[in-house]
Image 1 (cartoon, rainbow, N blue to C red):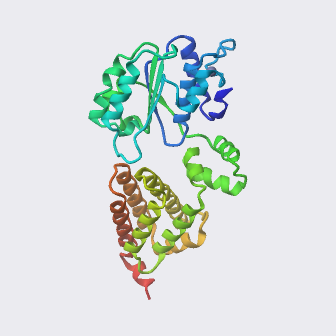
Image 2: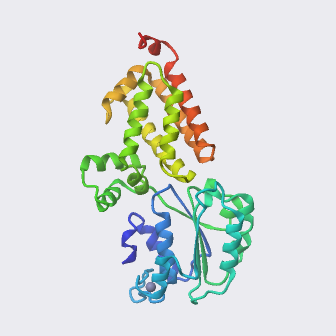
Length: 346
Ligand SMILES: [Zn+2]
């Protein structure tokens, strides 16, 4: 029953069940797919099922008991044969020392005799050096061991890694499953649920992160600032940086917060684009109407492109203040150039 909390990936659960029954488990997998769709939860549950010392073999499913010593140790993060590794929050790349440590631990004999499982999160952030040091472990793993790498897409991985792994693709979740997950997280209001489902891109992690009212407040403030006759790009960028920093000291948290705002702004601009093409407006009507009054279709499309570009820079670890200053500057320039902006200044 422990897979019950993994929603929307039944086909993958079944596939792994069959593979294990037929003793065909590969020694290295790359779980790829958008952030927040459940790859890490899935990997952890799989690890638990593989390491469980009292599995339910009677009904031939790949299920952990959740009660044996091994299950308890995995849940507590103390199982000697389970390795969970992720990039430290204050680093942009996976440190080689961390990978070396993992390889040493992974090469030792299984302490509890059920094999070993390593889950390497943030595989996107392996550099050539940190990847090279565990290629040998990937190629010649100890017996009964499984290496699971988690990344956003195959394209973001080094070819030397991909060629040694079986790729398992995680898809965005369909709206009914997202709705179910949101309700399980005590979100009851139907309009809120619909809005979150619409904005989440099929990622429950993203949908839940968007529940934060501060995000919405800042998003409105930002859009409102962009509808002013004279846009204070510098001031808006400064506010945006401060808002990012409020997420916490770790850059990963700050980047995540900026990315969530980008997502909201892009969605609003897409609504504005639809509105400028005569489609009925969605939420935030007043601000959107002000935006569409100010910017024609072409300008809105340019603004969307600018945001997507900033998102890419953010993903490549360009410093947050630089990304935001460049973005706000470009958006202000786009909005202020040409006749419509001059007309609205009078
Ligand atoms: Zn167990």
